[in-house]
Length: 246
Image (tube, rainbow, N blue to C red; front, top):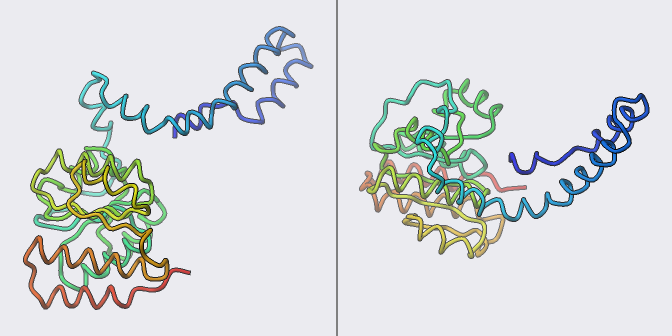
């Protein structure tokens, strides 16, 4: 995000023109500003394409551990007192369905979400959710990833999904990680980083993807946790009643 915001904005041209007209900028400085502005705007698409590699390179820099882990947990919510629980990363259509199914099935769970408005509204409804960037070690620790049984990643950002899987696997070698991805091409990288199960949406009709993904995840939950058939049947029934995407 920082790379995408590093360019000079369009309003800067207006400010610089006014500054040149009133004498705050000399003609030479004004021309230099215009040149730098055009270069920064032209470089933005290339920075966007190179951002995953730049982020990976930054992770290898010998920076203090506090910087790599994140300066803060990203949440003002108290740490959930749970263990052997399910962590849901992302609260979109599938994340909501999974959380509802976990509640119906009596399965302890925690949700990590990046939208502050969603976090505020859902927390008011009693959903065990907190704001945070799941790629940050401190946020996963706040969700008690080391005590968790299963982590489900259901976010559309492929780079963030890979980083989340990698960080979670490093913090908990025994964690069962399920990742939903939009494209088949993402399956191999996710598996290499430590995901146990990858569910691609590309091979499913869009109208069935959310319910199919939810059902697949609960099948994997049963296999990895040995949950009771009653709780899983209730959860699966909740998945079957998931709304169709519009």
